[in-house]
Amino acid sequence: QSVVTQPPSASGTPGQRVTISCSGSGSNIGSNPVNWYQQLPETAPKVLIYSNDQRRSGVPDRFSGSKSGTSASLAISGLQSEDEADYYCSVWDDSLKGWVFGGGTRLTVL
Amino acid sequence: QVQLQESGPGLVKPSDTLSLTCAVSGSSIAYRNWWGWIRQPPGKGLEWIGYIYYTGNTYYNPSLKGRLTVSVDTSKNQFSLKMSSVTAADTAVYYCVRSSVSPDFFGDWGRGLLVTVSS
Image 1 (cartoon, rainbow over the protein chains, first blue to last red):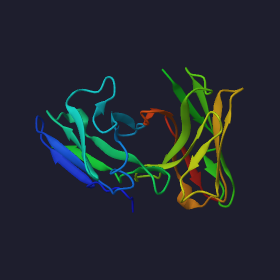
Image 2: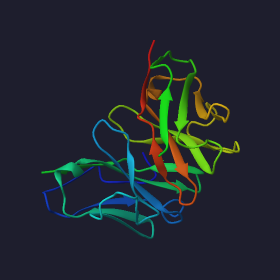
Image 3: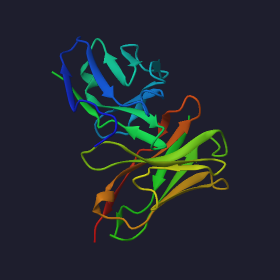
Image 4: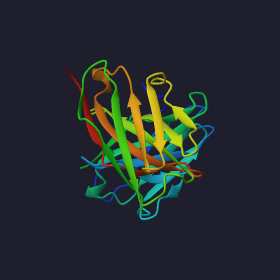
């Protein structure tokens, strides 16, 4: 059981906007910036969003991140079939003195 | 562009020590970065294992601490992971990663190496 929680699944149709949530506590999301990773099938994860809302170079502006209190969200607008992947939030936890990942959200494009 | 390449045995016996190495190219390992390991059991999510700063400062996952050693070899521009007393629960794809400093995120990943713990 991860200390930060994500919904196990999400879905949307092409062109739709979907959001994926990441819920934590004061020792992690409440105190530190959140990063978001995308893992396409059979590949290594790659960072999409860092420091809550900063897009990594080369990441389409369809992807955006936000944080409020002890929760963070990843939004994907104009959903495309190639967005079908697993998405993970990650944050440093001051109590554990280590990085924690959410359990991951599998996004299906219907 | 930093490139990372994991190497090591794909099969380890229970109670043995798992030893992996990550070769770094495109960047000197003796630079302001954290170098570490993340694993992913088959069909499951990501788990941070630990990382090391080039100066030797380390942080380890508390749930794995006591079994872990991450070290850096600046002469070979590579870093290593040793995990002792492995069990079947340690079967996973192991990724080596580079984390920048401020902002902190895992910006570069190796392709991953599947390590199976089985007799």
